[in-house]
Amino acid sequence: MTALSSLTDAPVRLPAPLAQPVVDVVDARRSFGDHVVLDGVDLAIQPGEFVALLGRSGSGKSTLLRAIAGLDAETSGILSVPTRKAVAFQEHRLFPWMRVQDNVALGLPRAGRRAAAAQALEEVGLADKADVWPLTLSGGEAQRASLARALVREPELLLLDEPFGALDALTRIRMHALLVDLCRRHRPSVLLVTHDVDEAITLADRVLVLADGRLSLDLTVDIPAPREPTLPGFADLRHQLLRELGVELPAL
Amino acid sequence: MATVTAPLPDRVGRPGVAVARAARLGRGWRRWISPIAIVLLWELASKAGWLDPGTLAPPSDVISAARELLANGELQHHLWVSLGRVVKGLTLGVAAGTALALLAGLSRLGEDLIDPPVQMIRTVPVLALTPLFILWFGIGESTKVLLIALGTTFPVYLNTFAGIRGIDTRLIDAARTLGLGRTAIIRQVILPGALPGFLTGLRYSAGIAWLVLVVSEQINTTAGIGYLVTEARGAFRTDVIVMCLVIYGLLGLLTDFAVRTIERRALAWRPTFVGV
Image 1 (cartoon, rainbow over the protein chains, first blue to last red):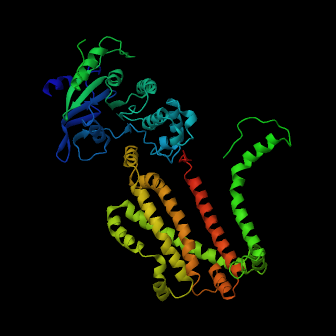
Image 2 (image 1 turned 180 degrees about the horizontal axis):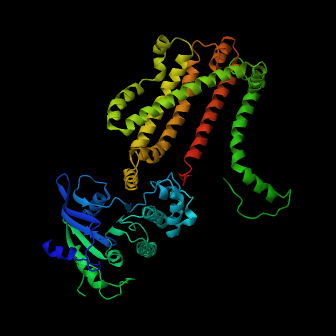
Image 3 (image 1 turned 180 degrees about the vertical axis):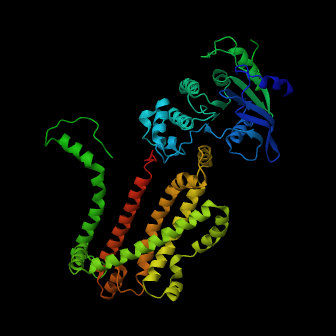
């Protein structure tokens, strides 16, 4: 960890003096019975920074996200998290008994929430679906509605728990472009939990790997956007990350 | 439902058109053929003397009995009394079942305190409590209404409770991340989520309400459909008895239709599985 902390403390893209981190996690610990899932995780996310968190199934990445989202009081070490945060999950988790726009507007202050929801749906290209029931949406549409519901809150921190994991490859590419666009406009800090290495490199400023309850790798992605797997440096990063995740590839 | 797939020549009287129209009306009407045939057969058997009217009156007699009782206003009176009992009992029962389910469903303490006694009482057939209820509440209206109320409490309780506990915790997590507090989560997530269960319970309860009514109306009444039956039995009027049975059936159908209409409205969000 000591070798990594120098990396963590020096995000290249930030203006000096260093801003106060939006998320500050120090020595996060969580176990389920005898099974230790988080074994001392340190994580700081800067304002506007896009961080991707990789890990194998069961590595505890979702546990960490849930803890930061405030859904798990048992995890220690979550020092500061903004109150204005929003989550989009792998399953869209729209409430089936509310129309799409009511799902998006849920929990917003009464005044102006309809207009805000309409605008958010417009932004994700779902203006014409505002009045339909969620169960009639396709997978991609539902996930876009879920993104709209998160972004309409103008979050300082956007937490994404494998939001594109269940989508087909083409829809996923379209969703990536949409997410990049939305982030450029709203500039939230983002923590994206994923097991898709390419997705992490394509979207994030910084990619972390969670293994054995600790962050085992912390890489800054220095590839200019829009990022394509063919760009120099991409394959190298992918190689490094995959190896950290236990996938050995033939040498480049 | 059969629908016309191929365009047919639009010439009246042509067999193609008739077939198309038959296909369009098709199944809806087809389902009436056998019930009507049975009624006709029954009438025929009576007219031919194979069926003694003392055993079972022919449909035509049943209809004239209904006419007679409608004309002198008796049927309306008794129907109204019976309907009133069901409405009162069902309202009480559904309210009690819902209240108990909410108390038990929304808190562990509530569940531990409420669920065991409810589950125990539930195993006793409601009608077996009739003698006790008569001792407690007399032979008047209260006994009938309260028996219906008790019988209808349990299906609503069980299904609503299961509905509340069956809500996807992931949805509750999502609601929490949207900043909803406890009250808002109950109102926006738990109650709508438990609604399908509640409505299933309501449908069972509506059926039970009529069942309990039939039995409780046969004991010491001076009004109601059950009273009509008892009176008709004394006078060997099988036509009136059959008429009352038909009315019970129609009332059951009507309540089922009412609940299904509520379901269709309230659960419009749910795409219905219509078969494979």
